[in-house]
Image 1 (cartoon, one colour):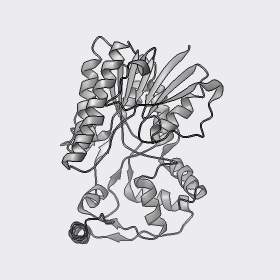
Image 2: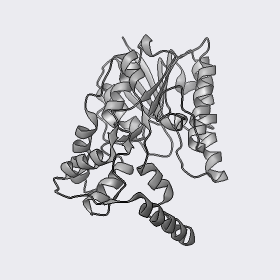
Image 3: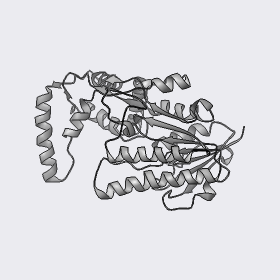
Image 4: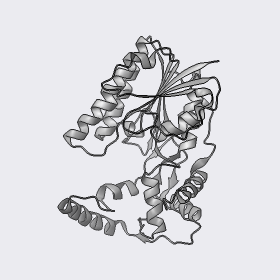
Length: 330
């Protein structure tokens, strides 16, 4: 069946991988939006099935872009850990106002399905260590903006488009200069320490496993009206680091430091960071993240959609680190 698909945020990390996979289906015609990031010029585009349009979802008229669209992947968003008024305004403008405008345009154009990439930041904290789609709530400005966006889309979907929301955990993969690449560099340069036992939990998801989920929920009635946490099996930090060391082909042993010393060092680093007005390798926020015991469970999506991660974190790290080396990033 011929399908016309719109991807907002098409030039971002997730968008590039998603569009590459969508192009493999000859029945798909894709309209990809971009704004700040320039679209890549390396896409294989058989029969000119891909059209890029520069669009600001906050300001521009979206009527023409959504006309005749069957499915929208709404990936466009703004991410920030800052709580400054400027950053909060940007978060609300892009993530909330922009999403509301996409929802309104989708409803007017009678789009069949809207698939929204949210974040586990929308359900970041709970009184329980295992967080599911119901028991968590946001605490950061970023998480609040994503939760508001979800609520707008749910309200807009009434008697309108079919809605599917995915909340991915921390994504990593080739061509992504994020926290995993930073961690790999620190381990390679022997600048990484584990605070405590190393049995804190990590919740990473390889990009190609996430793309598989995005493709799976399209046009599938099981996914209509659903909110899913998208995650892989959580790993202890020590196991995650071991996989990186193995992928690097190193015999490096990671030193473990008592938590109390870690908090003292992190406090000193925060003071120096405040004085210098620049980020430093260690902070109390980063230390808390390293000691995290939270698990974001993927039980619901596995049960409803009958799926498992095909690649997994270990294979994803091997592929990603190989790519980093080929590109001279390590």
